[in-house]
Length: 388
Image (tube, rainbow, N blue to C red):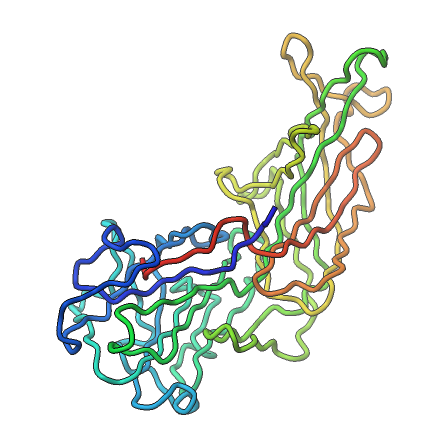
């Protein structure tokens, strides 16, 4: 199964004031019967929450944009170009509760009207974050725009963000009624999950069916010992490779995925039994249980290494529906299992826009760890927008 889309989030449209995403059909241009000089630059966009992987095709959040206008081409202008379309740099585009987007704030800023120049637009998401700086320090500079992103120092995976950028270069009011931008994931995602093939011969009778055992994880911590790239210069034009500062010190990162003493992690996680008909991985989720609890890192040029800390219980339901816990040896009170030597050894680099899985497999004989690299970010279709 395809696990990743082509990262396409088309997020720009030129429309009349008040046009909402309900008025725009996917993959269609908007015919605005006005003189070109009276066409407004306006936005409309879609894709979901900050602090988690952005999957699907709706952006229901704010984002930032830089606009450039010039008489020639971006290639000839880029070296000395400075943002000059909007009143602020970056311009924040707000998501409104009625489903529309605009860049009008409490100062009463007016919508911008197209001139007859050429334009290039560059966007990034999330619009504001303590670890994202426009250019190097938030000060506007000439040249091709970029952001600097630094991994948070803490070990809370929910503070890691899915950085996306977009660009649309050398457009004009005469060439198209809409500005189509493709937002792309610029970091790498690691999910942690498990498959459970544990069976228990509860009556020591091979002629009867074994009980399917549920694995109840009570502690799962990911220790990564050699995270090298902790900061990156990310160009908003994805065709320009990101730049990683030289001589970054290797960092150890410890991310608690399941832990009763950690406020952001789930306190326990049940790995339901897999069957011949159901071989799906069970991904560790956030506290709400809605999304995978992903570790989103800057792409890495070294192979990641580390180890898992794991504590789990084994339980099955008897004929009356009661949960029975298996124990270690003859001690019926010893129901926790804590395996060792659960090493994490990536055999591939972390590549921009790719998704990876640290996969635990439970059987009646052992617990093993495997690293799986997905080809793409998720399994949804291409994400197209007219700046919803």
